Structures are given as structure tokens and as C-alpha cells.
Length: 100
Image 1 (cartoon, helix red, strand yellow):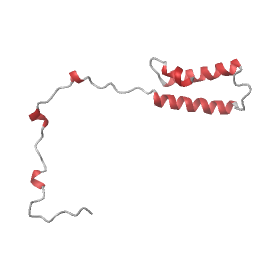
Image 2 (cartoon, rainbow, N blue to C red; image 1 turned 60 degrees about the vertical axis):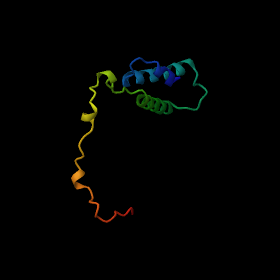
Image 3 (cartoon, rainbow, N blue to C red; image 1 turned 180 degrees about the vertical axis):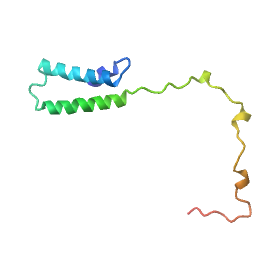
Image 4 (cartoon, rainbow, N blue to C red; image 1 turned 30 degrees about the vertical axis):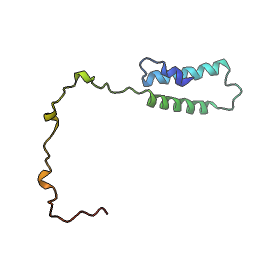
């Protein structure tokens, strides 16, 4: 119930998620749905904290990546960089390098 309700939030923020979780648990308590369970208020507080943390990590905002058409495309020549390590390569006469 908590996950489904949180996913329906338009712009989830930590405050909105915390308020939503708190309200949903409070509604269940007020409705008597938890009267016959062995959970204490401390247990419910831990459960609310875990739901809040899990939902915030699941629903965190993401970085807006640039659209492909807004990127500047390089020509093939610009994309190929010169090999700066060419001068430091092992000469053909050098002994083979051990794989070990």
C-alpha cells in the first residue's frame, strides 16, 4: 500500500514521502486494522522509518540528461585522438612480457 501510494506522487520529496507514510499508517491505526497485531508503537515507528528510507532511495530524482539532438556531434576526424603513448610502446626487439 505504501509503495503504490508513493509511486503515485507527482514529484516525490523526502517531506512528501514521510508525510504519506505517516498518514497511511495513522489511517490503519485509526481504522482498527492493527488492533489484533502484536506490533508496538515503537515497532510501527521503525517500520515507518524503513518505508521512508526505502521509498526515498527508490524514488529519488534523477539527473536530466541532454537530449541526443542537443549534443554537438564531432566529425570522425575530431573523435579520433592521436595516440599519445605511441612513443612509449615496447620496441619489437624487447623480450615478451610475462602474463604472470
